[in-house]
Image (cartoon, rainbow, N blue to C red; front, side, top):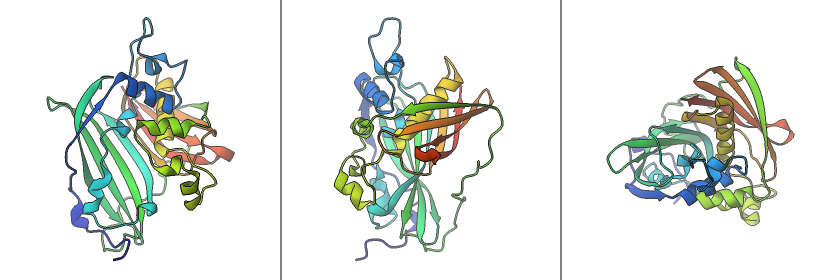
Length: 282
């Protein structure tokens, strides 16, 4: 049997088995450290600082309850040909630093790109009383599984090429050499980010940083420009290039209005690694 074949578009709507997920204050602190928070971010990195109430970094739900086994409903493919193309997270309610939820991942979109497919898998976390807490949508570009005659869907070309209007600011972070090793402890154990031999097979000189780790760094920058007391309602971006642990990240941000922050992230040699970033704050 071939390693991959055109997808079955009737897989749209397929859902994973509900998964019970839980998280603790320690998990929240570990995620915060994984996306570069430190001694200047004690609300995220400690749980017993006098006068400081612990908070969850609002991009953390991208790590909770995602079940990509649902992709088997679409068809057979080579997992080495899967690229994380884009990510969106929506915070639907206040999420405590200690909690539990039921998570379900659903295939919500499938687009035929000819020699590849773009599939969107959305994970919804719901509290025990039925309150939706978050939605996390991953856009996955998979080579070798297009060609079933479906619609091409929206363009994957960045839509925000022009510099957005509004107040501009750049926030710079320097990732740590062990950044990926810390971030993976939040649940993403893909060896591309830790195993030099696996990274070499993928054409990399060494393991690269998780795209969602860079996404988390950008989320911290969004909160900084949004100001004290702001919270994240939603955030999305496209992945445009790799980041290596130890690289510098320059997050360019624009605030066209009080509820919107647009952003892009540049990595080594000034090349963009996240594009089309849009966050809504409240």
